[in-house]
Image (cartoon, rainbow, N blue to C red; front, side):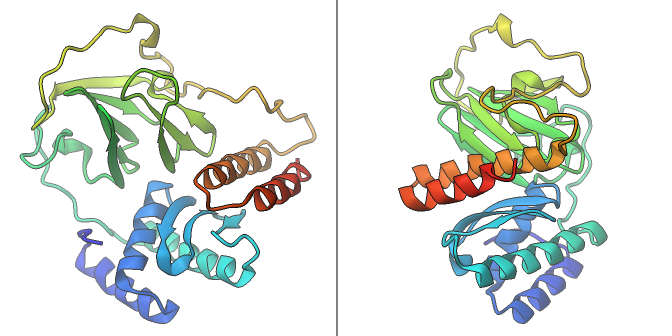
Length: 268
């Protein structure tokens, strides 16, 4: 994986790879995933670690083979070490500071946002996530909008089914949400290299004025009662959602998905 690292982080990654018996690319891929989850969670796809899976610090670890406890322990140990590395070391080199609203020549987002932990795109939209500055940049049909992510630790992105073309859904420790639930802090200039396209106004998706707007909640699950720990319930629900994604992609069989889902629901 061609990801730029600081010299100190590069040396640490090589050491971690040697001690855990993994390739450097595998460790860097997991490092990026842990960073995208704010150091507390990760959604990853690393062939050397069983393919797709999910990790939560102090919570559950899921791998392609849900019964491989040794692999789960290996992933948990690796992710905890990388989380500590992110907390104590400047891992990714900082971009040169730019004036507000100025875009780097090779990037479509404002330079002052720094280095994204994760970037990607689907259909007419692309995104960049910046945990260090708590910002999310979204380019839709050539128009860049910047959102305040607050205390969300974004760990997953997917295409919104049945939504407008190019609309994205994000997953954090609070569940799944779209950008309409986040306060917008700026609209950038047309993205570099984008194709001019008309942008339709959507009055129903005005930015919220609240600094901590609540994400959309899945009505399938009731709110926790007074005796429950909301953090535990949220982690379990997020884990079930991740299992469903693995099931839809064919990684988990019907029997494996049903068994694990029943186990998780039993903890609520």
